[in-house]
Amino acid sequence: MSTLLLRVLAIGVAVTAGAVCSGAYAQRNEPTELVDQQHCMFCHTSDAPFLAPAFHQIAERYRNVPNANLMLEQKLRAGGRAHWGDMPMPVSAERGGPPLSPEDARTLIEWVMSQ
Ligand code: HEC
Image (cartoon, rainbow, N blue to C red; front, side, top):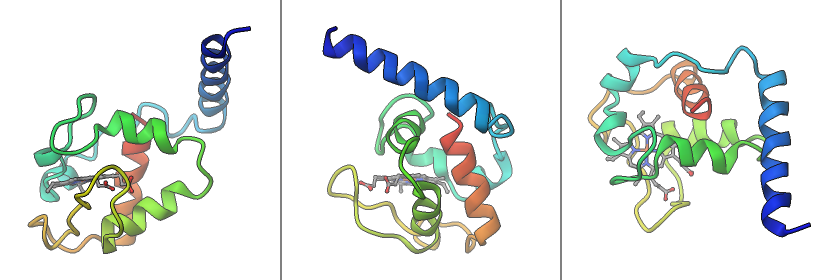
């Protein structure tokens, strides 16, 4: 079996498993107010890399990483090392938004990961 086919199969299984266990998160509505307040779409888009990786790419990369949500929530609030290039994402104060509560960070990351 070709590597490509294996990969496609693996993705299929992952997607199916994800759909089964995270039904509540599937196609989560955009938390528009938070997204606007925090200017997420200033640098990100849902499906095309622009100044920053697309949310779709981010969701793909971390979908099967244990505790990724927690790491990303902390990163949204406190910042951290760059994972995609040289430019780390600015923390909320630098993004020009109000401080991000843990609940809001979770809402945002669940939304990103549902894309
Ligand atoms: C000023 C531009 C900018 C804004 C505004 C911005 N981001 Fe980012 N974001 C980036 C860049 C650049 C990266 C890539 C950083 C890296 O290499 O880890 C990134 C990475 C990410 C990642 C992946 C982090 C990782 O460790 O892989 C997530 C999740 C994310 N952004 C979510 C958001 C959300 C949600 C918002 C709104 C609250 C937001 N971003 C606002 C520029 C921005």
